[in-house]
Amino acid sequence: MANALKRWWRYLGAKANTTLDDRADPRVQLEQAMAEAHDQHRRLKEQAANVIANQRQAEMRLNRSMEEYERLTANARQALIMADQAARAGDAARSAEYTATAEAFANRLVAVEQEVEDTKTLVLQSAQAAEQAKAAVAQNATQLQQMLAERQKLLSQLDQAKMQEQVNRSMASLNATVGEDVPTLAEVREKIELRYARAKGMAELGEQSVPNRMLEVEQATMNAEAVARLDALRQQLGLPVPQPPSR
Image (cartoon, rainbow, N blue to C red):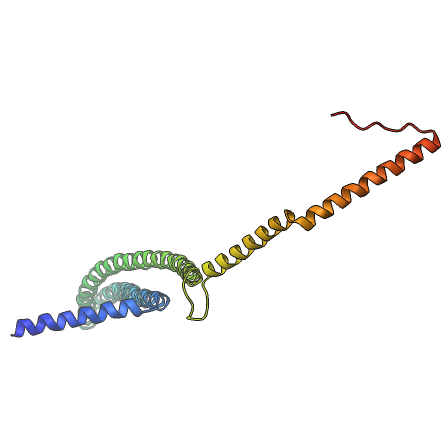
């Protein structure tokens, strides 16, 4: 029973995700992905900054230890010199005090020397970690720039896809019935072509009608009379009369 409920719950979750992906705006999803990438880069830079800060802190600790090492060395030397001077002056008690002081400096010097060596190892390790962190940030920055370029490309493709979808819908609407009282483009074209064909047919019939033939005969008669009048005028003027072409 428990397994069946788990499977059903997973099914509902997968179905919800599928419905969300189908209805979600790709532009919004793209901006969400870019925002997440920017957040990841910011977190990586913060982590790298902490690593670099540890390196700098280790270097400062090493510098302090080196300075203390040098100071202790100088103090130990000075205590030995003062002990020797007291011994030569016959002041054995003061010489012993300076000798004990030199030994105290020497004991502290041994501890600081070990601290210096440990700090040097820590500095080397933190320097390597800092270089790796810098390289990781630089690599992620390059990937982020590539994602920004890819984002612009995807946005352009998305706009082109939306435009093409709109064109497809417009073309589909031209070939589909808009409403019960609105004809389609194909129906209007068919009506116009039929009307044009009828008009052409009527014109052809009109050219072959009797009134048109009568007009044609009258025009021919007028043309013949005009030719005869021109021939008479030529004869009066003594001009040659052109002969009709032989058949």
